[in-house]
Amino acid sequence: MTTQRNVPSLTFRVKVCMDAESGSPQAGWPRLPKALIVAWSRSCHQLRQWLIKETEGKEGPSANPTLVGHLAISTGLILLASVLYWGVFFTVSGISSRWTICQGQPQTEEDEQRQLGELNNRLVNLDARIGRLSAVVDASITPGQTMRLKEQIRQLDQGRRLACTVGVFYFSHRYAALSLSTAAGILALSSLALISKQGWEKSNNAIINIGITSGLVLYSAWTFSQLYGQAANYENYSRKYVLANDLIATIESAVANGSAQISANQEPTTLNLASKPDMAKLIGHVDERLRVINKPEFTGDASFAEDSFQTIRGFIKPGVPEQPTPSR
Image (cartoon, rainbow, N blue to C red):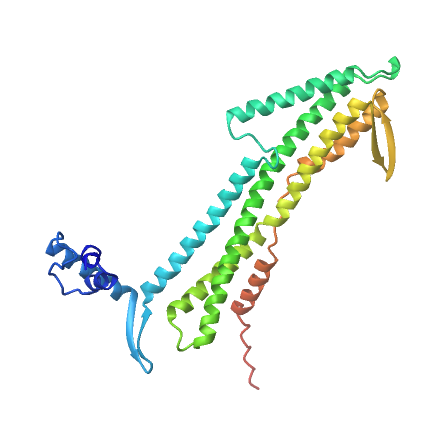
């Protein structure tokens, strides 16, 4: 009996909320003024009238959402979808940054100074190794070649950091779109199962609304993911990052060993980096790869949008009026 006096039951609270005429304080609310209880109960009753429409049918009384109720259900589902999408996006982005999957562009001044220090150390070591390469005096590499090779290292470092940042961005969006599509698909299939079991006429309109809204969310998430090319752009910039990272490692190893092996016309060629002509070949080889890395590349698939436009255009295309037959 003590528990019942201290904690109002759910039945009592619903009764207070739904009884618009009741204004007397109850046992569970001894400190609430009478006017507050009356205002609360009337507002709950009015809200129920706005959201739910009770009807009497062959199967007995039923409660279905009103137009405002349908809008409230759809808006709530869309808000939940937005929270899920951006929650997954920021979670994946944060995990990628914390795990340091790849070296992206600096986000703070401290990261910028650290990355700049690493790049300067790499260039100093590269300059020292090139200086120790022995060669014939008349065929030795020139200072201009050394400067160009160091500039290529800078461009490769900048290209791989940009590719990492863009790749993580598209990967996070792709993962968020897949998560949202999965959740919306499960909700749509569950609603369809309930509607199939009960029948269209006997199913509550709220379940039908949930099924339709979740289906639209599923379609929107999937189509926008294809439209902005999230998967394709992620793959493109992932390849660019791997290419830039491999080129940096190749140059550093080649300078350390004094030789490099490249493929020219599908035939492997060994270069002596102490020789000016061979160093020129290596620089040209890296320049070809830099064109691929520095090329802005953003793709998308708009075929479904174009097909939809053509279909709609066929429906709204005005017909040609028939010409009257001239009388003889």
